[in-house]
Image (cartoon, rainbow over all chains, first blue to last red; front, side, top):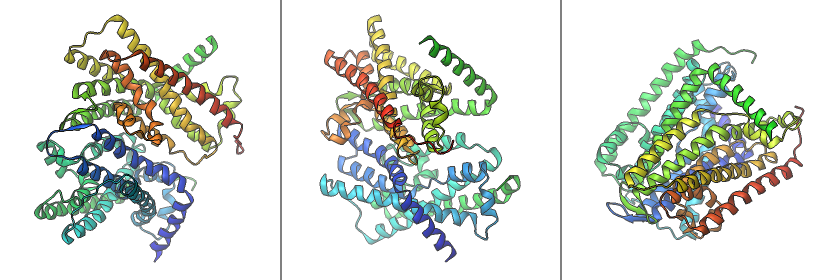
Length: 260
Length: 262
């Protein structure tokens, strides 16, 4: 119930900051949109078709907005650099879950904008969307989306907490942003990657933050692959939660808050 | 004019001093700048791995485009990008008064007070990569074509600058939209692709972004000997039109600026 109150408070903030929220959504929208326009002019060669690619990028708009947490700047800059962490430490709430429920409304609002975009494309631009209709794939999509959000959130929390040692995480942030740009499927769907790059992508955590739920929904993976990758995704969630717990325990000794 | 040159030289000196004061940050910025140029080139390799051409542009031509885009983006990051990041914060925290009260053009001070040398690393990667592609395509570039290329890059910089300025000026009215800069960083990437991705849509909203897709493709056309007089005239009109519009819009918006006790 305590966390529900936090969630509602941040929903109110999300509504109050709707213009900012919308601009943030535009960040998730424009990258995939430009790539759809790019593929319109492509000469087909190989195992892809324009309809599947369009569906992929439209789902990517929603997944990018809904599942990719952007909490690291909040944690590193506002809480650690500027010292707001003090107010969290003094309260009888878990820092992780407070931040989790503070971030969730922003994801929900932006995901909602993404859904509206999808419907506009279907209704006005007659875009044909093809998805896997079997109950197994739909349940697997929901489950993998849920895990994807927790994974991206835990990963970004770890990234933010590194500021307890380094103060400025912009370099590290840029580095992981570059990796995610390639391996989370921002540029092209991973199934279109050369084989070796596909293998690397499925080992690293980035594909499980956005790409994997889309691939399941599009029916790009077999049942065995879905189960295997769900296991790996769950494994990454456990790993990053454990890293977060470790960083929090060790890092708090490094923190000095003044004048809060 | 000479006064502004003197002021800018002093700004450069101050920025270089700051660079040596924060060495770790400087190294970090250089590395991320090089990293992003490699990523943007890799993106085109990945995008073209399953297709032979895009809107009539071959893979090598698209790589040339991304090389030119990196040159342009590198110089933009070096001279302007950080200033625009600061611009929205200045408005948001009502610090514009101190800029307006200085005895110099406020647009000049807002646009050029920070120089980020790390951007030059990206420009260098772009230059090296462009030369490599020009050689591998077997293009022969005359001195005239090279001068035309450099002049068109300067015009592209005018468009780049004016577009960002035009989009950011509304922050004077809506000061909480500080994330508009992030949006500009995303739409910038349109510059890596041929302008046909937008012109082929005939969509009025998307056509607004055409200047961004022309910034690299027009200079690249010179290297490919594909530039027509018509392209050149339209480009000149867009560049000077956008600059004039952005400056007028800024001074119009300033009339609505209300300080908040700074």
